[in-house]
Amino acid sequence: MADFSKREIAERYDLLGRDLAKKGIEIDQAKDRISRFTVEVPSWVFGAFGGGRFSEYLPPGAARNVFEKFDDAAIVNKLTGATPKVSINIGWDDPDVGPFDKIQVDSFKKLRDYAQKVGLKIGTVNPTYYLKGSHFGSLSANNPETRKRYIKHSLVSAEVASRYATGVLTIWLPDGSLYPGQVDLQTAERNVANSLKEIYSRMPESGYMLIEYKLFEPGTYHTVISDVSVASGLARSLGDRAGVIIDLGHHPHGVNIEHIVARLIGDRMLGGFHFNTRYASDDDLAVEPSMEIFRIFHKLVTGGVIGNSDPRKDWVYVIDQCSALENRIHAVLHSVESLTVSYAKALVVDEDKLGRFQDSNEIILANRTLVDAFLTDVRPIIYMARQEKGLPIDPIEAYVQSGYQQKIDRERKQR
Ligand code: PSV
Ligand code: MN
Image (cartoon, rainbow, N blue to C red; front, side, top):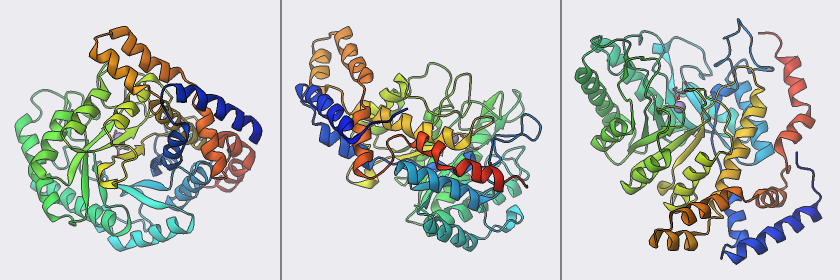
């Protein structure tokens, strides 16, 4: 818990600044980059999704509709100054609840206006491919009628994205199979490729598409877009408005995710992240400031992606998490904190030294240079950035003190 006076923050900041200067790192530059860092929050963490494992239990104060989800996202943004956009799912977050086939693009104007009212914007838009009738596949289905319905759903979503949000469509398909032999692997992939081609060619020209991959679930034997090579192959075949979004929970254990980042940057592929922590599998837990997240940020920094002054060269950053038991807002604030800390650590790597050790094959010394940055307590940078913006130094503590939780616990008892 951080409870520092202005003077204490200034002292800590100066001390760290002097240390970093010895490595040729300008602390003010790092602080300015941290000040500008933003990440989208997912609408689905605030509502019912993810609950339900223990009968109808939901985390305290769960939002009952999309507007309450935006209210919760607004307090997260107010406390962090870092989450002005909310990622939504078409089919879950519709202001006018109606049948899947009748979703109206225009009804999202209401949501865009409400978002503006509470100081937010709609961010990435997810078509939802696991709604009605997709249990045997959506864009991969053998049944052409099913494919047609989900292509239409994707185009409605793309229209929402371009008209009322940032134009970025994030696509995750639950398509796959449970048993060998259930589907023909090539046919399923061809159906997806053709469906995506149709969506890409008909979506608004200002729009972008990021394709998400996942090794497992709900498919137990195979998923059609199982890994980065399938996703990037599809994106490449579509064109330069298509890219890949990496979800940290979607890989086998031990995969080197920063290497994937490096490869996508090297390929000049549009990219994005769904941040979360997984322990066993796709757990969708709050982000911790782990060495892995630090290494990923280091690649995003050295690859010239994060914070690029040309927004088209930057990636898209989204928290993709759910809460089953934990307080939803604490969990999101914890993720924002962990990502900010990890980004700041990536900014204090002594790159010259690292380069020298790499050139002279000093393996452990190179590794130690990275570890040294990871072990640096960068919080004075973050505190100073927040103080300058008039934000609370410790957003979670500020949330606990705010009384918001008690208010929503009271108001949202009835569902
Ligand atoms: C699928 O597991 C996923 O990661 C996709 O990104 C969805 O949009 C999100 O979870 C919520 O279902
Ligand atoms: Mn995801």
